[in-house]
Image (cartoon, rainbow, N blue to C red):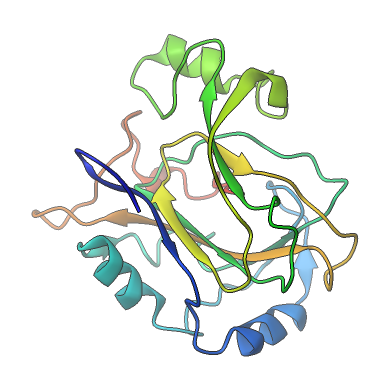
Length: 216
């Protein structure tokens, strides 16, 4: 676990699912379509396969918000070796990646970055810094980013992380659903005491940007 003064930044849980093979089998049976993100995603969401929400609340020590609002939450995604990797941050409080490829290359996990031009590691309220760090010229250009941390791709490993951090896949692999980088995505906010949700540093809640989640 990586923690700063605001709470957990990165939480890694191995052997997260009690039946990962069953969840993977469900993922392999689904149709996948091209969306705004790298690779392919399922149109359907799969939040019923495990007690995800309760487990995440236990891990984070907070109740969650916008769990059902975010239409990308709970979808399966697969990426292949020839897909371009987007380097980005997301607008909601937290994101999660659950790795679902057995014997995946360890180096094809999830990485966290710092912008070389700005030194920024996470979203900022400074529009100029945001443009310098996350501008369109940097979205797919690895040269604009310095890797800070890397989490290995291990089957049935869950990574929950502060979605405002700059992040992206460490690498993609494979050329079809059965051998590609298969994972399940999660996007949500943390409920505040007034039953609202924490907003991003750019001032938008995840419900205002629910279609823009790219993750890794």
